[in-house]
Image (cartoon, rainbow, N blue to C red; front, side, top):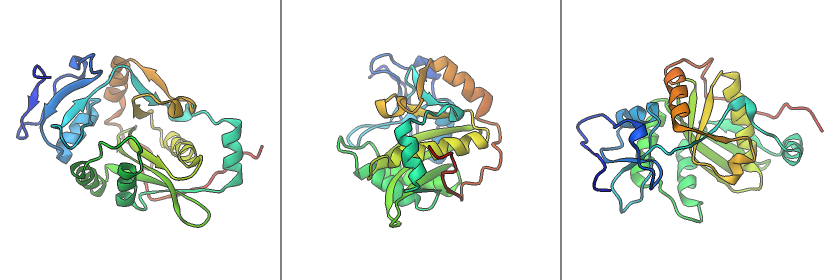
Length: 237
């Protein structure tokens, strides 16, 4: 770890992502800060922060990278039945602060979402870069949620929680459909999980991921208005 670059809070730069370590996979640099400027620079270059309260800020760019192409999301028969039941409503940017705090507190294995991280991403939300997606049950209670960062035609998912069965899967379907309508090229999932892979996510080499970012992160998405409500309009089965 001592051979990694230490970032000065007063200088906004990152080493190239392809200089990240192989073990631990993707660790690239330490230090710096969580200012909006540095966070946006990180995402534009395929880098994200991930650290615990007792660590310095750690910056990562894993290889391979887990991504989901919005128009390639997989909807299983059982999930389609859940969607047809219309038990959930999905909204965006309705309660960002609540979503990010539930992402931090509902994970049994603990969290990297420190108070500093919450403050940093809340700042990005106020600037229009970070967004929350909420899932509501028929009683009007929050059943699941996600937050992430949108830049150009790329959405970088940060964390998700689910309080009811299938709530997070319903969220992923609606989000992917909306991103596809807007012309987004990819949803960055960072590292693979069985949950994501069953929904159509896949891993790609970091070089390919960075190439997509260079092509898309500065493009303007179609009608990027995140104040909306989704309802499932798919066919009955």
